Amino acid sequence: MAESVKAKMVIDKEFQISEIDPRIYGSFIEHLGRAVYGGIYEPEHPTADDKGFRQDVLELVKELQVPIVRYPGGNMVSAYNWEDGVGPKEDRPKRLELAWRVTETNQMGTNEFVDWAKAANTDVMMAVNLGTRGVDAARNLLEYCNHPGGTYWSDLRKSHGYENPHNIKVWCLGNEMDGPWQVGQKTAHEYGRLAFETAKAMRLVDPTIELVSCGSSNSNMPTFPSWEAETLEHTYEVADYISLHQYYGNRSGDTANFLAKSMDMENFIQTVIATCDYIKAKKRSKKNMYLSFDEWNVWFHSNEQDKEIEPWTVAPPQLEDVYTFEDAVLVGSMLNTMLRHSDRVKVACMAQLVNVIAPIMTENGGAAWKQTIFYPYYYTSVYGRGVALNPVVSSPKYDSKDFTDVPYLDPSVVYNEEKGELVVFATNRHLEKDLEVDIDVRSFEGFDVVEHVVLENEDAKAINTATQENVKPHSNGESYVDDGKLVGIFPKFSWNMVRLQKKN
Image (cartoon, rainbow, N blue to C red; front, side, top):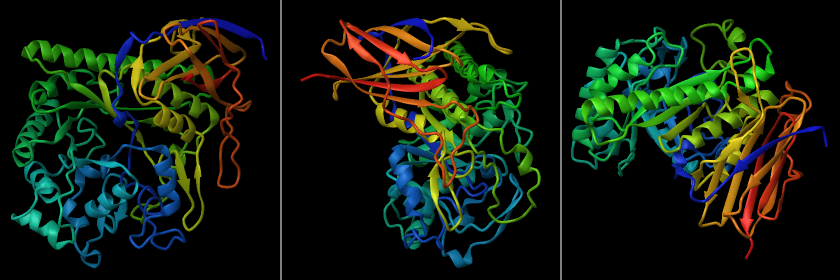
């Protein structure tokens, strides 16, 4: 064992944050790059079914147990006519897709995506176009998707072969409407009014839906968080969630600073919660506004190569970040951060799911494989179900270029009473030393370690490819229970999952 530093933690059944909404493990498929064409949909692929869906990709998605997937964008939705993607495929128009400057063939659309989602055991989170369109297109799409029948749009769906309604329950009121890159960018006032009127009409069509109001495109926007405050003045009583989007990169190659960036995510979440609660107080409202962190990931590797892509091609390889080991460690910490705020973060979408800044990569006509970031996502999704507990942490700290007092130990804790299972997810940010953590688990009498998964690598920049998996977890972690205490041994620069179960 390498030289270690010591930390302490107390975990108690009574220190409950919240029941975890499984939708915190959601993802995102946009009509962008090879996410759809060559990703989830490739009729010529050897594994494709009769609908053109790649079965190798579907199996990997099912492995992740993704509960909800946002669709069809993203920036793309702000100039998208949903009607282009329904009806006979041979009649569908090819369009200039303005967000990513490609040609959209519309061979995949709303109905096909619903079919794919069913095959992937997931639900659909649908976004409506509030860039070039508005109330009318949104209410028509909702009627098409959710109304049983006997009206123009619902009967049109039936004529397209879908007798039963899709019953899509979560809807995004546009995407990143504050962004100058957005087709149809709005001011906070313009967006707030449009979102309110759209929500009002949509709720008349189907009162059972949940709605997501657009927050800032990221926490660095000059209008953050005044955008949240002003738009929520309009949408607070009609929306259920406000969105957060954030991506991180390591352009400077400063690993210690990069691993601390989940602290920026923490601050972002806390600021949005505070803003929501200010509007709640101002409106004397009884309802809480919840958060939908519906775009999050590491994204920076592919920025330069994306500038060289020829415009107006079909499904070019855009935003194809090849993820490193250090990216996976930060992704683990980002998941920890959301779990620690699961009382307010109810929906989250890793952006995206396949090929585009994604845990799953494919070759057209060839293999599908797991990127490094697949693993923390997989383990947290599969084992992070239950109640999030609030650990009391005492950890040594460090300072980096952008952050002070960064704890080496970054944990989240999940208790699943039904399964008799306690799970500790922990990042050790120390680049040279193991962390030995004394964890008080006296309230979990009779629990013992059944598995300690470790994701570690000597090379921060190690990657996985179609033929070589260099970054893969092992189950040889050394944690153990001794006299009411869990001793967590977290190797230097690693992400860990320690799973305890109650002995019969």
